[in-house]
Structures are given as C-alpha cells and as structure tokens.
Length: 186
Ligand SMILES: Cc1cc2nc3c(=O)[nH]c(=O)nc-3n(C[C@H](O)[C@H](O)[C@H](O)COP(=O)(O)O)c2cc1C
Image (tube, rainbow, N blue to C red; front, side, top):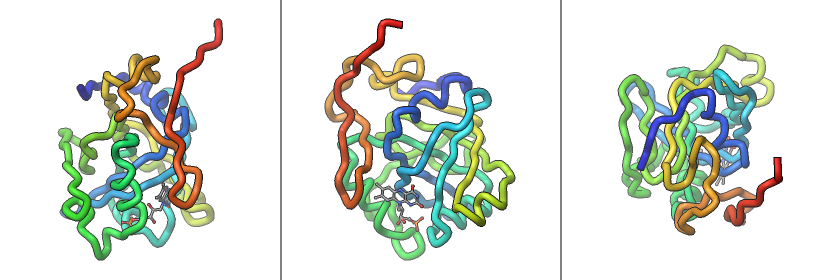
C-alpha cells in the first residue's frame, strides 16, 4: 500500500541508487523518462541531484514548471523503464504506448507512476549554472510516499516480494536486481 513518509526520511528510498522514473507536467502536457543519475544530496529538507539531458522533452517540462516527481520502479517494470528511457514524449504518448497508469496527489502537478514503490514530489531549486553546465538539477522534496511492502521507515525491508525489487542500471539494457539485505551490528 502507498503510504506517506516524513520528508526527513524521504531521501532513504533513493540512497541505494536505484533506477528512477522522472515525471513532469506543464500546461496540460505530461511526460515521464527513465533516470539513473539521481543521488541524495541532503537530509532535511531532502534534496536530490538529478541529471536531465538538455534534449529531453522532460527537461522542457521541468524547466517550465519547476516541479517533478522522482519515483522508483521495480524489476517487473523493466520493459516500461526501457520504453520511457528510449523514446521521447515529443513524438510518443508514453502513457498509452506503455500502458502506464497515473496517480494524482493534491498540490502535485506531475502525475505519480503507478506500480512504483517510492515517490518524491519535488521543486527545482534555482541553480541555472548547474543546469547549463552539467544538465544537473538540485530538487527539494515537498512530499513523499513509499509502498510499505518494500520500505519500512524509509528503508528497504529484509524480505521483499521478488516482483517488487528495485533495479540498478549497468549500461546498454543491462540491469542488476537488488538482492539480499545484510546488516552491520551497529
Ligand atoms: C535505465 C536508463 C537510465 C537513464 N538515465 C538517464 C539520466 O539519468 N539522465 C538523462 O538525462 N537521461 C537518462 N536516460 C535517458 C532518457 O530516459 C531518455 O533520453 C528519454 O528518451 C527521454 O525522454 P523524453 O524526451 O520524453 O524526456 C536513461 C535511460 C535509461 C533506459
């Protein structure tokens, strides 16, 4: 079940470096792309660094709206990840092409992608030099949710259904699926 989590813990579901999906909306247009270069940058309020290439449709929506949703898909969504990561919303309606259901949250312009297991709605901080030089956006969380079958207190659970495991992108369509959790004593 999707449940809200406190903003102070919203960085946690992104800390193990899973592939993400970035959704954005502006002026009635909504789009989603895959993004692997997403990294926590601060705790509270939570910030992420997000690389969004200049030629993407998502970039134009993010720059216009100054908002986005970053979310964590599962291994069950690999075809969807590859699909939204290899086509452009400029000429493809990814929602219908890849059968993606959208969830709505009051006060959040961008849709949330159904089937993901963590979501952070965020606003784009004003760092024009970073975007111009490195395609880098610093975003600050405004609300966050997790699937409580996968995360507890914002952290990966010990036992996760195989279908809900998160993935890491190696390169060129090769992925690693999250496996066993190991703990230190402290
Ligand atoms: C697994 C995966 C990870 C990706 N990571 C990024 C990323 O971190 N930043 C980026 O700009 N593009 C990344 N891409 C490429 C974009 O998702 C791709 O350019 C997409 O077609 C852009 O769609 P749009 O034009 O509809 O915004 C990735 C693609 C895949 C498949």
